[in-house]
Length: 115
Image 1: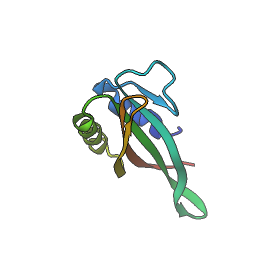
Image 2 (image 1 turned 90 degrees about the vertical axis):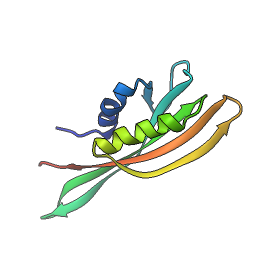
Image 3 (image 1 turned 90 degrees about the horizontal axis):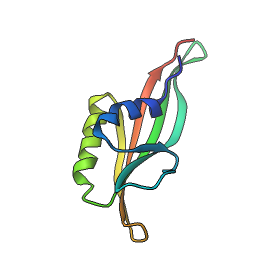
């Protein structure tokens, strides 16, 4: 069975009711949404010349026209509670042309491999 951090993040954050897409938000943007961007997928541990674990990393970009602070905290708490690793969080700025605040959360998760 293949493990997917994108799928797992979607399942964990679904109850929050934030629209989520991967790569780019293709629909008309609501006032708040998440875009998931895969960053890396590496074999992290080896045994007998075979990988035994992989580390998958994704950047969550939270776009919000309102106060993003409470939503950012909800996302982080949900991810940490589900066993994800938060490697970075940062405010990337206010986009004057769109009216969105952009906050990035970098997330990682390790998966055991079974060959």
